[in-house]
Image (cartoon, rainbow, N blue to C red; front, side, top):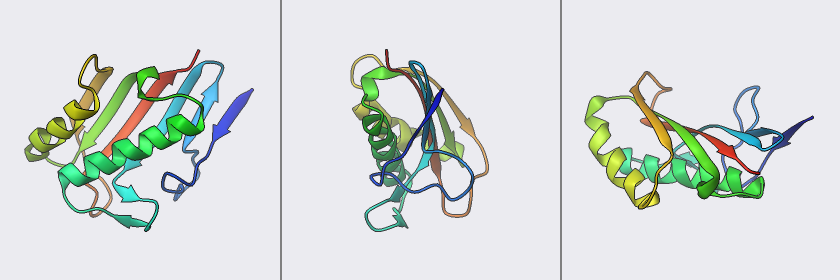
Length: 124
């Protein structure tokens, strides 16, 4: 019933979770961070981490046969209120027209991480 989505174009999970999980038309993309999967390293800075996290979200979506246009909600996690402006500048470039529903909250993330993005898509 549930389909697990995996792609080498996004960072491999570091714990017991799937990059993406789909039941019927609903696809949940696990939190993606600013790790470049080609080199296996975290990129530096809020804007760069936002850009890379969004690339990683897109890669999981593409592995499931869809794209950012299918996303209906994003949950975005930042480690500081000071990160909101550079995060939002990058995010707005990725969604120049209609953006999905979004929550953006300030949280604690693993050392070095400044951004994490979760997506929910409807594929059918």
